[in-house]
Image (cartoon, rainbow, N blue to C red; front, top):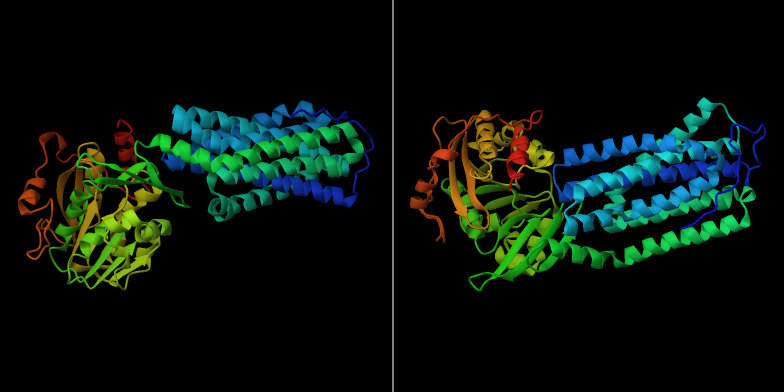
Length: 534
């Protein structure tokens, strides 16, 4: 895009401001442009943060890096804009065109960098710097133009400008999770905002300052904005194909289902296993959740030792794929099973998607099952009147703050309120081999909440060595690790395997670690430190 800057004088020099194009309406339009620019700027910031959290994890680090880099760059941009104030209108138009392109294409470019180049963090920092500089340059230019429309005391002008700017940021911040993500998704949402950003730039020049702008400049501006919108529109039209191609590049097997929800990216792949059977794999945010070839090992170990006692009323926290629920429903004396899963898209997929429904035996459609889509921590706070004989906890590893709170002392205290004195709780606890501090921190955390525990480990080829914690509230003796006398036929587990599973090798026996709490999420520190080497 090529624009010829308008020949303007610094607003501090003339004694009389140029006549505005629309009188009082011009000031309103300019403040509305401030509102749009602020909303777009915050959306770019949130989009970079959300993308990093999805692709890399560690949302605290991603948020900290994006915000700190962008705020620093905004300061640089404000200083860099000072020489441009003499040509504020033309500079602003050019600035918005560039910002629309960079901001609108930022998510798409970073996704491609992650998929093909494995350079996400350096690319993200560079994009955050560029977008921050451009956003920071907006306010000085807009302030200059506001004073040209109507002179006012500096403090009053600043108050008006920043009030509208902050309101725009509020609207942009709310629209991102509530409108843009559900309606367009991350890639298309950023492109839509980029187009809006480009339109905001042309409104300022063509409608507000048209009397002070030469016709050839207006024509060049319109042509430039049309070019920007054409690029963004083309990217929008191709974004689905680009996303599919980039996503497939990240997975070894063909993708048969993929969607990005408000909570996570869900990917299902299908291939032929070494046994000749189909291998269905579920990935959440790029992390493998199960392989149909050996998931029975994981889920038999997770469920059946916890159901060796009373099991009329069973609670499953997490496990939205329905595979743990499948094992629970194999017991005819289970009268009721409650499945609490945060993401409704996950339970919908488990219920309706053919390959997954076949794998879980249609568990989510069983009349004994109640599915609740809610945050488990929040749900437990309102479930104090209910009591469960057995609880299966099948959350992903605690590699984000949102997940770490589900492995906290406070969470297990809440859980005790829905248990009977004879209840048994099973917690998937990560790998004692690959992440021993994480595993033993989970054990220590559960015991700090007043549970007696029994620890054991099994081998799941897709995951490697994997650990669990069987817990009982209020007891001093570890709960016995066994199968019920009437347990159904199992492919992997029996009492002999369970007895051996309690023996940990010398180099993976218990170590002294901190319990995890809401204020000190030690398990998050351990898991990020240990898994980054694998």
